[in-house]
Length: 318
Image (cartoon, rainbow, N blue to C red; front, side, top):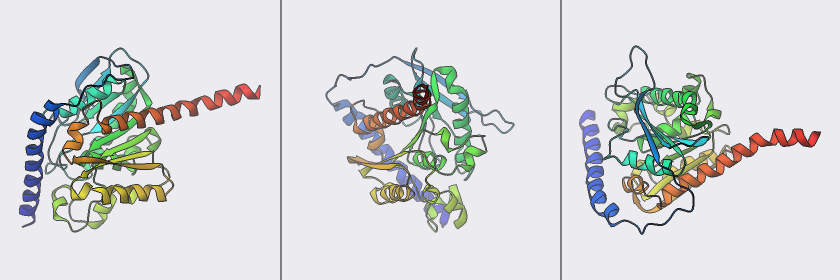
């Protein structure tokens, strides 16, 4: 019975997603918003695909790889580490009719490097293997992105749906980064899109991915790791989002972070559902695309200001 309920939920969810995607790809993007000339400089996009980020004995030849979308011939740019969605059971860095690549290219064109990692999926694996893979891919990024021109001290984590959950969990539960020799300080900011922040106990839709143990589900829930130590958060959701990702869930998570004195703000996007929030974000003029760029610019400036203070203080002391 439980497997049947899981199957029904999964098929209904993805059936609705692909139906909406088909409609939007032929009408919404085709109709297009009036092109607006960007005020900021734009760059050609360099792609480096299928880089292995884990080469252990149990490495998966497909799921332990990542793609890079980079502003060509640029250096010292901030980076978005973006985790794909798919209910922890489906998806790939290059799937969703190419929209992940379109979104990454849009940000790279505006001077932000983007990393798209794959990770192993259920039912082949269950929690915590998804997040362990995400942490491995993040650690590779932190160690290697400088070779491609990116700043290892300006990496922002993001993702959509299940990817939003994994990005939020990586940015709140430090244990996965510690296993990779890193800490939460390696993340400059977190920007989950339509994420899941609580893996509800007793809900059978999560059985195949997280099991039935209440403690495991609690530990897998980003909201239960809210603290003052987490990086700044921008939590984005659609006004017509799925029940487990809607305004109530997102605002509850935002409030939990704020109550722990963390820097957190939320953004409700009008006229957006779970799918259109993602695919419309690939447009340079979309409010989600711009909000992400603005958030990164704000916190990159803050990082640079922090780095300059010791120098300024040293000069003034003389």
